[in-house]
Each structure stands twice: as structure tokens, then as C-alpha cells.
Image: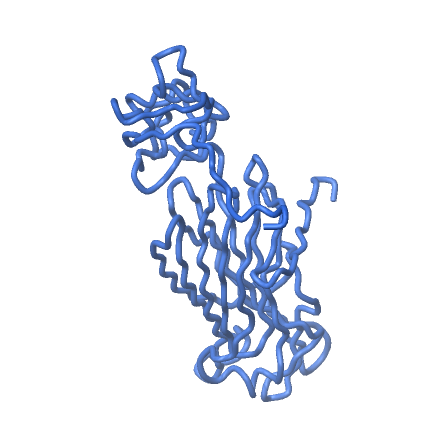
Length: 318
């Protein structure tokens, strides 16, 4: 082969069959070369209860014979519905112990990039006067925040609301304001080692008669899976809107770092775009987000090889 290798032989250090929880099945274990790692790639402590019966996780020790930790979960205050000593939240078949992986938040927002906009009666309204942003304080005509908690495999809609709408008075100075309502519908389902989420929300201009006011419609789909081998989130996403106003979506880790997934600026006017359902594709893609040891964002790469920037979390002084 001209000095080139055409294949490799792997050296097997050990082969094991485990009971749920990590206890080695008697007679179904073979160790060719000593390895300190065992079930779920955790370090074994064979000197206490015998081979493969005790594992040293990041924060505490787990007894694989009874599937229980010696000490309480460091995050027990956040999960009062779960046992403080349970291993893998008692999901021994379809999940694994993550020790500290909390949630990833998904933000979806509609905003008017222009400084001003006008309704069909030519009345003047304030826009959001901004570009696409991951700042929490950025105003929006409608928004929703989803929190996906991996240990409990739950998705919660944390917020669905709109910022105030301002209309300039026709006679005299000053402005009239009101806050629109955001209606939403969310569906979730299993997807590999994660979750599939479908979200729809709609809202109206609160300063025009609702019977004659078209709705702002947004439909978005997210699929989130955790890859234990590479310690990463694999996220696919797509969204449609009316084409007006602008639409943006970003994700946020527990430390407050953010990654913009996609955005599209509005075209046309409310009168020309808002009638009908969400039929304009605003963004679509796939991204792999690698995590650090504390499960915060470390890097983000799209399926096409592009790199997405990570916006650092703001400090209290900022």
C-alpha cells in the first residue's frame, strides 16, 4: 500500500453487560486491559463494593446495585418533584445521568424594524426601530420563550406576550398606547434523545378594531437532541410567518449566553401581508452546539459548515 495503512485493529479494553443503573451482570464481563471507566463512561471505584458497583460522578457517588446516590442532588431545590437521591431521575432505560444539565431556552419574536409604520387609515404607529437582536430587553410585537429541561424531559412556555403599541394622536401631540394579547398553541413529542416542539402564536394591533384587524401569525418547529458522546445539542429548526413584521429566533444557555438561529426582516405593509395564514418561510437550518463541562455553549456549527457566533452573557454591571 505504499506505506499507507488500509485498516486498523481496535484494542478492546473491556466488554460488559449492565443491569439498568450500571451494575455488571455476573458472568457477562471481560476485562482485557484495566480501564478505570465503566457504565456511562464514569469512573469506577471497585475497592468499596466490588467491581462495577460504585461510580464516581462529578458531584457525588452512585451505588449501582440500588441505583441511588449517597448524597442529595446539588440542584434538588429546583426539582422538588424528584427524589434528591434518584439516579437518572429513575429513567433507567431511555435516559442517563447528566449531573447539572439544566435547560436550553428558545426565544421566538416578531418585531417591526422600521421606526414608524402606518395602518390602512394612514395612522402613524411606532415601530421597534431595531435590527435582529438577542437582547432580552429588545421590544417586540409578539414573543414566546420555551424552556426545555433535559433531566425531566419537559418543555415549558415561560412567556408569551407583546410590548406596548404606540399610536400618534391625529390631533395635538402625544401618543395612545395599549398592549396586545398573544395567543399560542404548543405541541411536543419525543424525538430520539430529546424533544420535538411545534409552536404557533398570533397577535393583533390592540389600537385598531379587532374585527377588522388581521393577525400576526408565526409557526415554528424545533427538534432538540442531546448527543452524550460529543456533549452537544443537535438542533433543527424552521419557521414561517406572514412576511410582516420581522421574525427572529435565538437560543440561550443557563449562564445567559445566546446564539441567533435565524431572522428575516419584514417586507410590504400590514395591509398587504397580514391577511391569511403564515406562508412565508423566514428561516430554516440545523446547528450543533457543543457544550463545556457546565453544559454552557462552547461552539456552534451549522450543517453547512458555518460558524454561529456566541453572544456572551451580560454582567450585572452592564
